[in-house]
Image (cartoon, rainbow, N blue to C red):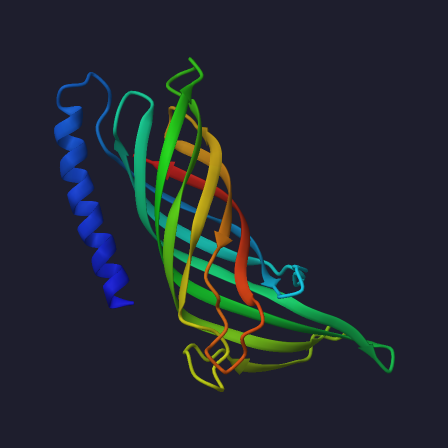
Length: 226
């Protein structure tokens, strides 16, 4: 996690300096800083050797993201950030003696996203539409496995074990790509939606070689840039 945090700080410092230099000759605004919060709808996707790609059910989680908006041109910017991302999935739902039992896993990650963003001015008070995409790296910091009685709310919880050994639940490193889109108002308020596509196998190295498990996350955000 320290390496990811240091990478974020170094990238923010370097890209800020570059952006300030590149925008000194342009008439547009300079770098901005933003904060956004919102809801995550995560699940897991499994890729198995027989070609099928089963998925878990979704759960509800949250995210908090601080980011920089660093202009690369009139309608293009790079947005590095540092984010707290809630992920996970619902593995199963079944009935026992007429009682609905749910098996869920909720995880929390420190994530470093770097998005390249294109902006389309709307001609209304400095507002614009934006779309973007880019890679992310994330480190797992906490999580819970829950077996819950959906009828009365009773549950049994255990901590998620991050690691790469037999007995661990998930690898601590998650890599993937983010895709975002939304509207930025001239007041600084922005509304956006995004999709996180995990690409690396989250399963620990426990001797299993058939397929892999990856994160999938829909997100919906309300933010402010200044």
